[in-house]
Length: 634
Image: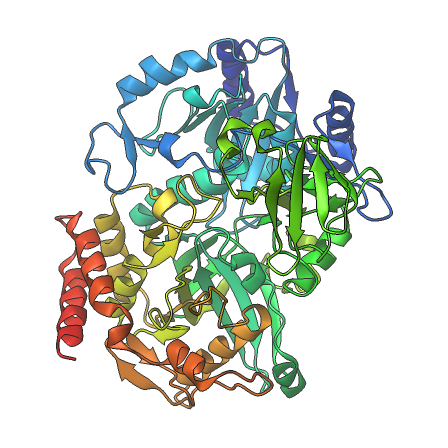
């Protein structure tokens, strides 16, 4: 390391060594040489599989424990001196309970293991919003991922030295990966031991503490106190044919198309007109009121932790090009004997032979039939991109027996970790410490009901914008703990990451007009409507740009729109549909308001959700009353 290590860093690291009983302390500097040694040690231990360097240069595949594949929302808690929330917005634990029930799990948890010290800067160097984290961990897998996801080493140490030794302290032990003893604790009020505790998990959202733990849960508590926003948002740059630049943020629950939108390619018709799209971030944004009267956003992350299934050259060519440049860690994908990787959606046909994410051997035995460990026979449906068990069900793990559909060869929440700097569509200002001015903000979710939640709807006021984001519903995905497909209200796509009570969070958003003269236009989007046969009626991917183009024209006063109880809608003539033929019935379902499509039940569901919070801001409940009244008037 070329930068002097602040004594507070070394003192705290050695204190954690004493608690955990680690063999020795290894300070990580983020250098290519040290990262290479770390990766090779993981290969030697069997935790990493080196991939074919011709296909995936300097890249590796890893498999997690079967019980450690997603965020453990039921085990993720905020630790406050008193419970002001009654577990409505987040799960609560008292400091006494944390020290009596969880701290003992760290005692000697690293016996026989080395302790890696990870100095990580979240945010560009020189930004007033950037934060330093020092995470100690017994997991070389976590350390290797943090080397990609953060600015590790000297940038973090410089930041700490320039800020009088201030840093967020992260304590992580993978321990025994015992799910019954898994905890992810956050201490917004501070703790003498560490600000973040994570034990018995090595999954990204639980163990990469710079990501959801610091960049969202703790950062949003700091943001509220300091007058800025920490949000679960991508950042996108759009240049229109006149050369004018538009920056937007967008918040979606995980596995709802965030990364695809962040790396969007416009349809040919728009590209030929001169529209250009580049990305600044795919998951998290920190937004601060700027002297120019707008909200400026930075991306605190240095890498991308993307969902693999469904990613391919057609859905996200920019991401595939990013991955092919190498230096990738794949987690819980399928691997082939020749050092390749595969996941459902990567290609129409699976490989003839591979090992799945549980390391079971699959071998093709018929035109569309594979055998798993020579015991279970499964059939591949190329049209649906899914598997079905045809025999040998009794040999499946207990949790899978009786299921008609077999979980994928790659876990539905399998991931890739890759540096953002490798993205061919990366905007040149992605590391601008001053951030970029945001003129448009989107909120979205996965709502399949035909004709219910429109493709795009623009808020008519700031209060309506906050309401729309508050009641946003989405079908749950494999990235979250719970029943896949259930609809849950995911306010601002922040439900799993709330650091303080939701009503207070909404008041903070409602206060933004006091410090931001030029507020971004706000809209909701839904790419996921289906017809009666379960087929998507909107193609999505690059065609999602049609909604963004309408919103840009709307903001400039040149787009047609229909006023409705759920915001301004494009109507069947509002979107530029050049090159996209669609039945008028489907276009109407996407672009107009139909009170008979299920809106009375939807309004009731929203009202029940808001009623869980007796201290909900009046501005939000008033918007709910307006919607209910409008629906009842039809």
